[in-house]
Image 1: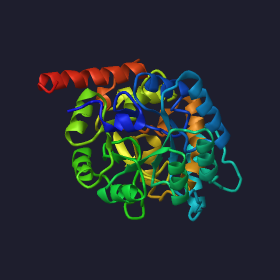
Image 2: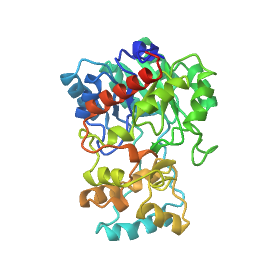
Image 3: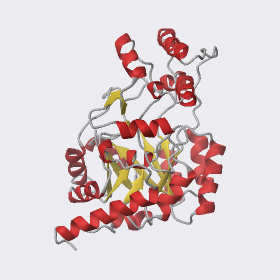
Amino acid sequence: MNLDNRVCEMLDIKVPIIQAGMAGDKITTVDLIVNVCEAGGLGTLGAAYMHPEDIRQAVREIRKYTKRPFAVNLFATEMADNTGGLEEVQQLLDTMRGVLSIKRIEQEVKTKNLFKEQFKVLVEEQVPIVSTAFGVLPPYAMKIAKENDIKVMTMVTTVKEALTAQEQGTDVIIAQGSEAGGHRGTFDVNEHPYGANIGLFSLVPQIVDQVDVPVIATGGIMDGRGLIAALALGASGVQMGTAFLATQESGAHPCYKEALHESNEESTVLTRHFSGRPARGIANTFIKEFETSKIQPLCFPTQNTITGDIRKAAAKLGDKEYMSLWCGQSTRLLERDRTAADLVKATMQQAENILKTLNYS
Protein backbone atom coordinates (compact mmCIF):
# COMPACT_ATOMS: atom_id res chain seq x y z
CA MET A 1 0.00 0.00 0.00
CA ASN A 2 1.62 3.25 -1.17
CA LEU A 3 0.95 6.60 0.54
CA ASP A 4 2.71 8.44 -2.29
CA ASN A 5 0.68 7.35 -5.30
CA ARG A 6 -0.49 8.47 -8.72
CA VAL A 7 -2.84 11.15 -7.40
CA CYS A 8 0.14 12.73 -5.62
CA GLU A 9 2.07 12.68 -8.88
CA MET A 10 -0.87 13.97 -10.91
CA LEU A 11 -1.64 16.89 -8.55
CA ASP A 12 2.02 17.46 -7.60
CA ILE A 13 1.37 17.05 -3.87
CA LYS A 14 3.44 15.21 -1.28
CA VAL A 15 0.68 13.45 0.67
CA PRO A 16 -2.74 12.20 -0.51
CA ILE A 17 -4.80 14.57 1.63
CA ILE A 18 -7.11 17.22 0.17
CA GLN A 19 -8.75 19.96 2.21
CA ALA A 20 -12.34 20.31 1.01
CA GLY A 21 -13.37 23.53 -0.71
CA MET A 22 -16.04 24.57 1.79
CA ALA A 23 -18.02 27.49 0.35
CA GLY A 24 -19.49 30.40 2.27
CA ASP A 25 -18.64 32.62 5.25
CA LYS A 26 -14.91 32.78 4.34
CA ILE A 27 -14.27 29.38 5.94
CA THR A 28 -11.42 28.41 3.64
CA THR A 29 -9.09 31.24 4.58
CA VAL A 30 -5.81 31.92 2.83
CA ASP A 31 -4.09 30.82 6.05
CA LEU A 32 -5.86 27.47 5.99
CA ILE A 33 -5.12 26.78 2.34
CA VAL A 34 -1.47 27.81 2.59
CA ASN A 35 -0.79 25.72 5.68
CA VAL A 36 -2.36 22.62 4.16
CA CYS A 37 -0.27 23.09 1.01
CA GLU A 38 2.94 23.70 2.95
CA ALA A 39 2.29 20.52 4.95
CA GLY A 40 2.22 18.58 1.68
CA GLY A 41 -1.52 18.31 1.07
CA LEU A 42 -3.82 20.13 -1.34
CA GLY A 43 -5.52 23.24 0.02
CA THR A 44 -8.74 24.34 -1.67
CA LEU A 45 -10.41 27.74 -1.88
CA GLY A 46 -14.19 27.39 -1.54
CA ALA A 47 -15.08 30.03 -4.12
CA ALA A 48 -18.58 29.08 -5.22
CA TYR A 49 -20.25 32.16 -3.69
CA MET A 50 -17.34 34.55 -4.20
CA HIS A 51 -17.31 37.47 -6.63
CA PRO A 52 -14.76 36.98 -9.42
CA GLU A 53 -12.45 39.79 -8.30
CA ASP A 54 -12.49 38.47 -4.73
CA ILE A 55 -11.38 35.10 -6.10
CA ARG A 56 -8.57 36.79 -8.00
CA GLN A 57 -7.41 38.58 -4.86
CA ALA A 58 -7.54 35.38 -2.79
CA VAL A 59 -5.59 33.42 -5.42
CA ARG A 60 -2.89 36.09 -5.48
CA GLU A 61 -2.73 36.12 -1.68
CA ILE A 62 -2.30 32.33 -1.62
CA ARG A 63 0.58 32.62 -4.08
CA LYS A 64 2.32 35.16 -1.85
CA TYR A 65 2.75 32.53 0.83
CA THR A 66 3.16 29.22 -0.99
CA LYS A 67 4.61 27.92 -4.23
CA ARG A 68 2.78 24.64 -3.81
CA PRO A 69 -0.26 23.68 -5.99
CA PHE A 70 -3.75 24.48 -4.68
CA ALA A 71 -7.30 24.09 -5.95
CA VAL A 72 -10.35 26.31 -6.32
CA ASN A 73 -13.83 24.83 -5.94
CA LEU A 74 -16.90 26.04 -7.88
CA PHE A 75 -20.51 24.89 -8.25
CA ALA A 76 -21.12 23.36 -11.68
CA THR A 77 -24.84 24.09 -11.77
CA GLU A 78 -27.15 26.75 -13.17
CA MET A 79 -27.82 29.47 -10.58
CA ALA A 80 -31.36 30.19 -11.80
CA ASP A 81 -34.01 31.42 -9.38
CA ASN A 82 -37.48 29.91 -8.99
CA THR A 83 -39.60 32.03 -6.66
CA GLY A 84 -42.75 29.91 -6.62
CA GLY A 85 -44.02 29.82 -3.01
CA LEU A 86 -41.74 32.70 -2.03
CA GLU A 87 -44.17 34.62 0.19
CA GLU A 88 -45.14 31.60 2.29
CA VAL A 89 -41.48 30.85 2.99
CA GLN A 90 -40.71 34.51 3.67
CA GLN A 91 -43.47 34.71 6.27
CA LEU A 92 -41.92 31.80 8.16
CA LEU A 93 -38.50 33.37 7.86
CA ASP A 94 -39.93 36.65 9.19
CA THR A 95 -40.67 34.96 12.52
CA MET A 96 -37.00 33.96 12.72
CA ARG A 97 -35.93 37.46 11.71
CA GLY A 98 -37.98 38.74 14.61
CA VAL A 99 -36.00 36.58 17.03
CA LEU A 100 -32.78 38.03 15.59
CA SER A 101 -34.16 41.61 15.58
CA ILE A 102 -33.81 42.12 11.83
CA LYS A 103 -36.37 42.93 9.13
CA ARG A 104 -36.91 41.47 5.71
CA ILE A 105 -35.13 43.30 2.92
CA GLU A 106 -37.86 44.32 0.50
CA GLN A 107 -36.31 43.82 -2.91
CA GLU A 108 -36.47 41.44 -5.84
CA VAL A 109 -34.89 38.09 -5.06
CA LYS A 110 -32.16 37.56 -7.60
CA THR A 111 -29.16 35.26 -7.34
CA LYS A 112 -26.17 36.22 -9.44
CA ASN A 113 -24.99 33.56 -11.89
CA LEU A 114 -21.24 34.17 -11.75
CA PHE A 115 -19.79 30.86 -12.94
CA LYS A 116 -18.47 32.06 -16.32
CA GLU A 117 -16.78 35.08 -14.75
CA GLN A 118 -15.43 32.97 -11.86
CA PHE A 119 -13.99 30.35 -14.20
CA LYS A 120 -12.49 33.07 -16.42
CA VAL A 121 -10.53 34.36 -13.41
CA LEU A 122 -9.20 30.87 -12.67
CA VAL A 123 -7.90 30.58 -16.21
CA GLU A 124 -6.41 34.08 -16.20
CA GLU A 125 -4.70 33.44 -12.87
CA GLN A 126 -3.44 30.03 -14.05
CA VAL A 127 -4.97 28.16 -11.11
CA PRO A 128 -3.53 24.62 -11.39
CA ILE A 129 -6.55 22.63 -10.16
CA VAL A 130 -10.30 23.19 -10.33
CA SER A 131 -12.79 21.10 -8.39
CA THR A 132 -16.56 21.12 -8.78
CA ALA A 133 -19.67 20.15 -6.85
CA PHE A 134 -23.18 19.47 -8.22
CA GLY A 135 -21.89 18.37 -11.61
CA VAL A 136 -19.05 18.30 -14.10
CA LEU A 137 -17.49 21.39 -15.65
CA PRO A 138 -19.59 22.41 -18.68
CA PRO A 139 -18.05 21.31 -22.00
CA TYR A 140 -16.68 24.74 -22.94
CA ALA A 141 -14.97 25.08 -19.54
CA MET A 142 -13.59 21.53 -19.69
CA LYS A 143 -12.10 22.28 -23.11
CA ILE A 144 -10.46 25.45 -21.81
CA ALA A 145 -9.16 23.61 -18.73
CA LYS A 146 -7.52 20.95 -20.91
CA GLU A 147 -6.00 23.59 -23.21
CA ASN A 148 -4.49 25.34 -20.18
CA ASP A 149 -3.27 22.17 -18.42
CA ILE A 150 -5.67 22.71 -15.50
CA LYS A 151 -6.44 19.50 -13.63
CA VAL A 152 -10.15 18.91 -12.98
CA MET A 153 -11.64 17.15 -9.97
CA THR A 154 -15.35 16.29 -9.77
CA MET A 155 -17.35 15.30 -6.69
CA VAL A 156 -19.79 12.43 -7.27
CA THR A 157 -22.22 10.41 -5.15
CA THR A 158 -22.99 7.45 -7.45
CA VAL A 159 -21.22 5.18 -9.94
CA LYS A 160 -23.37 6.68 -12.69
CA GLU A 161 -22.13 10.17 -11.86
CA ALA A 162 -18.54 8.91 -11.72
CA LEU A 163 -18.83 7.42 -15.20
CA THR A 164 -20.32 10.66 -16.51
CA ALA A 165 -17.48 12.65 -14.96
CA GLN A 166 -14.86 10.37 -16.50
CA GLU A 167 -16.51 10.46 -19.92
CA GLN A 168 -16.57 14.26 -19.86
CA GLY A 169 -12.87 14.53 -19.08
CA THR A 170 -12.42 14.83 -15.32
CA ASP A 171 -8.93 13.91 -14.09
CA VAL A 172 -9.79 12.94 -10.50
CA ILE A 173 -13.08 11.73 -9.06
CA ILE A 174 -14.03 12.61 -5.48
CA ALA A 175 -16.43 9.96 -4.16
CA GLN A 176 -18.65 11.54 -1.49
CA GLY A 177 -20.19 9.14 0.99
CA SER A 178 -23.39 9.81 2.90
CA GLU A 179 -21.35 10.57 6.05
CA ALA A 180 -20.04 13.80 4.55
CA GLY A 181 -20.90 17.19 5.94
CA GLY A 182 -22.23 20.08 3.89
CA HIS A 183 -23.98 19.86 0.56
CA ARG A 184 -24.49 16.56 -1.16
CA GLY A 185 -22.64 16.60 -4.48
CA THR A 186 -25.47 14.78 -6.26
CA PHE A 187 -25.89 16.00 -9.84
CA ASP A 188 -29.68 15.69 -10.15
CA VAL A 189 -31.66 16.59 -7.02
CA ASN A 190 -34.92 16.09 -8.92
CA GLU A 191 -34.01 12.40 -9.09
CA HIS A 192 -32.61 12.40 -5.53
CA PRO A 193 -34.34 15.18 -3.50
CA TYR A 194 -32.13 14.50 -0.47
CA GLY A 195 -29.10 13.44 -2.48
CA ALA A 196 -27.84 9.99 -3.33
CA ASN A 197 -26.83 8.82 0.14
CA ILE A 198 -24.58 5.81 -0.29
CA GLY A 199 -22.13 5.01 2.50
CA LEU A 200 -18.47 5.56 1.70
CA PHE A 201 -17.49 1.91 2.24
CA SER A 202 -20.06 0.87 -0.37
CA LEU A 203 -19.45 3.72 -2.79
CA VAL A 204 -15.67 3.84 -3.14
CA PRO A 205 -14.88 0.27 -4.28
CA GLN A 206 -17.81 0.26 -6.70
CA ILE A 207 -16.57 3.49 -8.32
CA VAL A 208 -12.94 2.31 -8.31
CA ASP A 209 -13.96 -0.85 -10.19
CA GLN A 210 -15.75 1.15 -12.88
CA VAL A 211 -13.39 4.03 -13.69
CA ASP A 212 -9.78 4.43 -14.79
CA VAL A 213 -9.01 7.81 -13.20
CA PRO A 214 -7.86 8.17 -9.57
CA VAL A 215 -10.60 8.22 -6.92
CA ILE A 216 -10.50 10.30 -3.74
CA ALA A 217 -12.69 9.26 -0.80
CA THR A 218 -14.58 11.84 1.25
CA GLY A 219 -17.14 11.62 4.03
CA GLY A 220 -16.48 11.16 7.73
CA ILE A 221 -12.70 10.80 7.34
CA MET A 222 -10.87 12.47 10.22
CA ASP A 223 -7.53 10.74 10.71
CA GLY A 224 -5.00 8.16 9.54
CA ARG A 225 -7.40 5.29 10.13
CA GLY A 226 -9.77 6.79 7.59
CA LEU A 227 -6.94 7.31 5.13
CA ILE A 228 -5.78 3.69 5.38
CA ALA A 229 -9.37 2.43 5.07
CA ALA A 230 -9.90 4.54 1.95
CA LEU A 231 -6.67 3.28 0.37
CA ALA A 232 -7.65 -0.31 1.20
CA LEU A 233 -10.92 0.25 -0.66
CA GLY A 234 -9.00 1.32 -3.76
CA ALA A 235 -9.03 5.11 -3.35
CA SER A 236 -5.84 7.07 -4.05
CA GLY A 237 -6.36 9.54 -1.21
CA VAL A 238 -8.87 11.36 0.94
CA GLN A 239 -10.63 14.69 1.09
CA MET A 240 -11.37 16.04 4.58
CA GLY A 241 -13.78 18.87 5.36
CA THR A 242 -15.07 18.81 8.93
CA ALA A 243 -11.62 17.97 10.29
CA PHE A 244 -10.18 21.14 8.74
CA LEU A 245 -13.26 23.16 9.69
CA ALA A 246 -12.26 22.85 13.34
CA THR A 247 -8.62 23.90 12.88
CA GLN A 248 -7.14 27.17 14.10
CA GLU A 249 -6.82 28.60 10.57
CA SER A 250 -10.42 27.87 9.58
CA GLY A 251 -12.65 30.93 9.21
CA ALA A 252 -15.60 29.19 10.89
CA HIS A 253 -17.29 31.29 13.60
CA PRO A 254 -16.11 30.44 17.14
CA CYS A 255 -19.61 29.30 18.14
CA TYR A 256 -19.70 27.09 15.01
CA LYS A 257 -16.46 25.45 16.10
CA GLU A 258 -17.85 24.99 19.60
CA ALA A 259 -20.97 23.35 18.16
CA LEU A 260 -18.72 20.91 16.29
CA HIS A 261 -16.96 19.90 19.50
CA GLU A 262 -20.28 19.55 21.35
CA SER A 263 -21.79 17.31 18.64
CA ASN A 264 -21.59 13.59 18.01
CA GLU A 265 -22.54 10.99 15.40
CA GLU A 266 -26.26 11.49 16.15
CA SER A 267 -26.28 15.29 15.94
CA THR A 268 -26.56 15.82 12.19
CA VAL A 269 -29.47 15.71 9.77
CA LEU A 270 -29.90 16.12 6.04
CA THR A 271 -31.80 19.31 5.31
CA ARG A 272 -32.82 21.43 2.34
CA HIS A 273 -34.09 24.30 4.48
CA PHE A 274 -31.04 26.54 4.42
CA SER A 275 -30.17 26.42 0.73
CA GLY A 276 -32.77 24.40 -1.18
CA ARG A 277 -30.21 21.65 -1.78
CA PRO A 278 -29.70 18.68 0.54
CA ALA A 279 -26.87 19.22 3.01
CA ARG A 280 -25.72 17.56 6.23
CA GLY A 281 -25.42 19.74 9.31
CA ILE A 282 -26.11 19.91 13.04
CA ALA A 283 -29.82 20.07 13.82
CA ASN A 284 -30.83 23.40 15.36
CA THR A 285 -33.85 25.65 15.88
CA PHE A 286 -33.87 26.93 12.29
CA ILE A 287 -34.13 23.41 10.87
CA LYS A 288 -36.62 22.22 13.49
CA GLU A 289 -38.96 25.20 13.00
CA PHE A 290 -38.93 24.71 9.24
CA GLU A 291 -39.68 21.01 9.60
CA THR A 292 -42.51 21.66 12.07
CA SER A 293 -44.09 24.20 9.71
CA LYS A 294 -44.37 21.61 6.89
CA ILE A 295 -43.56 24.45 4.47
CA GLN A 296 -41.39 23.32 1.58
CA PRO A 297 -38.19 25.28 1.02
CA LEU A 298 -37.63 26.95 -2.34
CA CYS A 299 -35.20 25.45 -4.81
CA PHE A 300 -31.46 26.18 -4.81
CA PRO A 301 -30.14 28.84 -5.09
CA THR A 302 -33.22 30.91 -4.22
CA GLN A 303 -33.63 29.43 -0.74
CA ASN A 304 -29.97 30.07 -0.05
CA THR A 305 -30.34 33.69 -1.16
CA ILE A 306 -33.38 34.49 1.00
CA THR A 307 -31.98 32.84 4.14
CA GLY A 308 -28.69 34.70 3.82
CA ASP A 309 -29.71 37.62 6.05
CA ILE A 310 -30.73 35.23 8.83
CA ARG A 311 -27.44 33.34 8.72
CA LYS A 312 -25.43 36.58 8.72
CA ALA A 313 -27.40 38.06 11.62
CA ALA A 314 -27.04 34.84 13.61
CA ALA A 315 -23.30 34.84 13.04
CA LYS A 316 -23.06 38.46 14.14
CA LEU A 317 -24.94 37.60 17.35
CA GLY A 318 -23.09 34.32 17.87
CA ASP A 319 -26.42 32.47 17.78
CA LYS A 320 -25.77 28.93 16.53
CA GLU A 321 -29.50 28.12 16.49
CA TYR A 322 -29.96 30.03 13.24
CA MET A 323 -26.63 29.30 11.52
CA SER A 324 -25.97 26.57 8.96
CA LEU A 325 -23.67 24.29 10.94
CA TRP A 326 -22.49 21.96 8.17
CA CYS A 327 -20.48 18.96 9.35
CA GLY A 328 -20.05 15.22 8.90
CA GLN A 329 -20.83 12.31 11.18
CA SER A 330 -17.44 11.77 12.85
CA THR A 331 -17.17 14.81 15.12
CA ARG A 332 -16.24 12.78 18.22
CA LEU A 333 -12.82 12.43 16.55
CA LEU A 334 -12.16 16.17 16.43
CA GLU A 335 -9.36 17.65 18.51
CA ARG A 336 -9.37 21.19 19.88
CA ASP A 337 -6.92 23.94 18.94
CA ARG A 338 -5.13 21.94 16.28
CA THR A 339 -3.42 23.63 13.34
CA ALA A 340 -4.07 22.51 9.79
CA ALA A 341 -0.44 21.45 9.40
CA ASP A 342 -0.63 19.39 12.59
CA LEU A 343 -3.75 17.67 11.26
CA VAL A 344 -2.01 16.71 8.01
CA LYS A 345 1.11 15.51 9.81
CA ALA A 346 -0.80 13.56 12.48
CA THR A 347 -2.98 11.89 9.83
CA MET A 348 0.06 10.76 7.87
CA GLN A 349 1.92 9.61 10.99
CA GLN A 350 -1.02 7.54 12.16
CA ALA A 351 -1.43 6.02 8.69
CA GLU A 352 2.26 5.10 8.58
CA ASN A 353 2.07 3.55 12.05
CA ILE A 354 -0.90 1.44 10.97
CA LEU A 355 1.04 0.19 7.97
CA LYS A 356 3.95 -0.79 10.24
CA THR A 357 1.55 -2.63 12.51
CA LEU A 358 0.18 -4.48 9.50
CA ASN A 359 3.74 -5.19 8.29
CA TYR A 360 3.17 -3.34 5.02
CA SER A 361 6.17 -1.04 5.31
